[in-house]
Length: 190
Image (cartoon, rainbow, N blue to C red; front, side, top):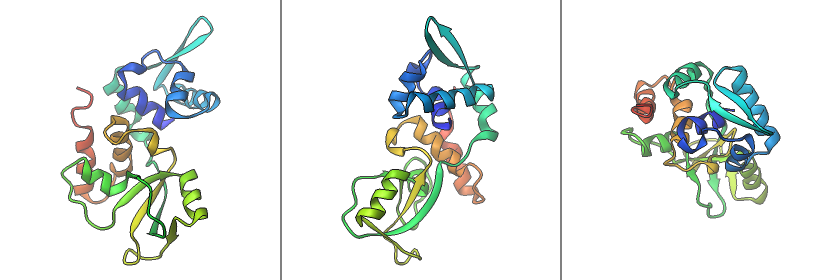
């Protein structure tokens, strides 16, 4: 539901979209997308209208207003984090965590490079021996953040990706990190 909301907030071409169009673009089934849209509608963030046999989805107000109403509902996209050592050369992966935040803000990156993956990729990496889990930063080559949704479905320069990173770090206890997260969304709604 959160990725669907981010897509609707950041995409001009998604006004009056059908659930099946959104599902196809984000790689979900129509049934999953229908549930996400129903959840967003119950929260008052989107509204649906019938046009003949098709259901159309729109934001339930101006983007700035919807964004403000959604703030308390945002959750980090990260389901789990794992320190890993590469056993095989890694495939090309999306940056995640502090690495992504540093790449899109003035924050200086420190420590391990972090990548964002989804659950199915994490399962493949573990089963095919691409990675080996390790206990400490000292032993690790990278940190893998496993997201609730696929970070590969959104481009790193896409505002939906920026909103996802913002959701991860908006309440970070390190003020430098939370301010860098805030900088990702400055001017987005004006």
